[in-house]
Length: 222
Image (cartoon, rainbow, N blue to C red; front, side):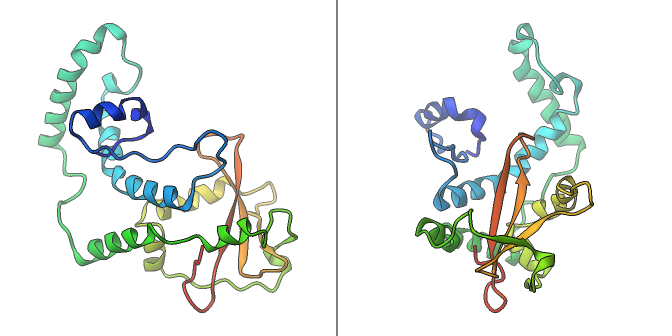
């Protein structure tokens, strides 16, 4: 059973009922970011959740489910969900086909392999070899080379196409008043770049995303 974090309080109930629920991890108290294992495990879950989200989006096109439901109407919600679901299943096309091709199998195998992969960039930070206080400069002020990445490589890197589809609009949100999106390269490690990424859930939150790349091996190493 694939669920989102909104079901966190009933996970134990699902287990008692005989289900095997899978939910993206939460940050523990005092934890600033997920571990590599937690992140990879959560990505496996969010990868297959898009079908659920797509179906929810169809449901919310109905006025009844598009906003807040009054408490007095709750006993009738289950019947309404069954009726609307039956209508959608009858008159709308399938969200996806239940077919498995070689590309899907290879992607699934690759995703499982990535679960145990170590983040070598994180390891360098933990060992004190890198710091956010290091000197950085804009990529236009440096002799900067970045590997060419094919669309196929991007799909594998992002576990298919969702991030690619939203990438352009997401970048546009980060362009400053001068029309620039500032990306920096480390002064002492010219294969490490970083950029500020605003949270999609809170405008007040921003993160520094670091990428370690290679011009000879795997284009994106960490």
